[in-house]
Image 1 (tube, rainbow over the protein chains, first blue to last red):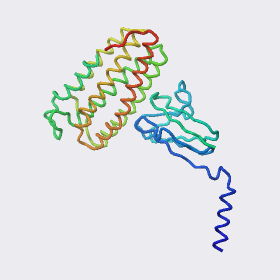
Image 2 (tube, chains in turn purple, blue):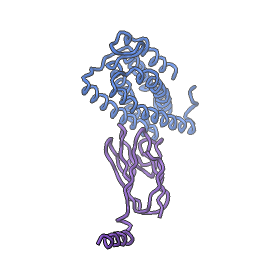
Image 3 (cartoon, rainbow over the protein chains, first blue to last red):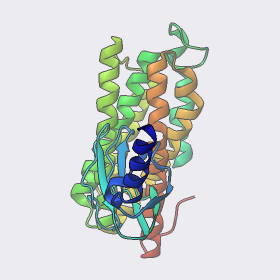
Image 4 (cartoon, helix red, strand yellow):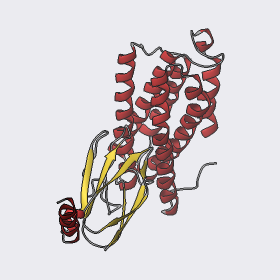
Length: 107
Length: 185
């Protein structure tokens, strides 16, 4: 019976959809930096940015856009985004131009 | 300009009535005085930022100024909340007074300027001011703070001041590139 359950578990994993295997990665906004500044994830994973600083931050891919993708992320708050497309996701804080980050999204 | 501001902050921190303070190491301000210096330094930059937001026509200067208002207001909110929690009443002192006097003089100068001259004066002063504040944080405020939470707050604020300095330098370089004047030494 135990062997049968193990086989079923393995089969479930093999045929599980990518969405079921997707994970969430954490990036801290801390010390006026993104930590980690470079991250490698799989397409379909989610990245959650959490503001551990005492000033607000944003997540933007356009340096000219202060609010960017996330809008203002206040201290203690989080914002997340699912990255479905393989490639390099370069971003920064729209409010603090010294803050930069990069995510490699693998297939 | 940097030397003048730095002299005001660093030497006054050492020469002020902080020598008579309880619990402070010799030559440094006590926690109540540190709280007052932190609030004063933040308020000064909020006031200058509001003026620059109103007067500057340069988008990068306005964006920087807006960020100074937002960030220094946020820091002051935290500082005030901590002071209340700790039952510390910020204590006025010679350093705060000197900072405020310098700020009043700076504001008077800025009020008389407009256009590129205003932008240059504002940004040059922001570079010098943040350099001086960073110096004071490293050499006096962090070493002198006795309460662990107050020390932690100042340590946590430090990267924001450093980032502001870098941002100010970026705007300064941008102004120079666009022919707004030579960099002050």
